[in-house]
Image 1 (cartoon, rainbow, N blue to C red):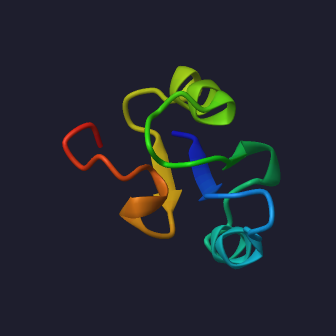
Image 2 (cartoon, one colour; image 1 turned 45 degrees about the vertical axis):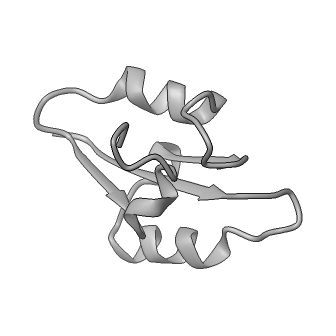
Length: 76
């Protein structure tokens, strides 16, 4: 089982430090934290796509809040 984390902020001027600190507190390895600075409008985000390709059954994914995955709750 691998442990991953995902961080998303909506714009370039926003800061993901709070989310990163929370993932570090959960002992997520730095190499397994993926971050995008992009709108949550859709899932066409480069690091989100990389994360999804790495995830396997049994892996654990930490996110600070479900809305960090996106705004479309049906797709989430």
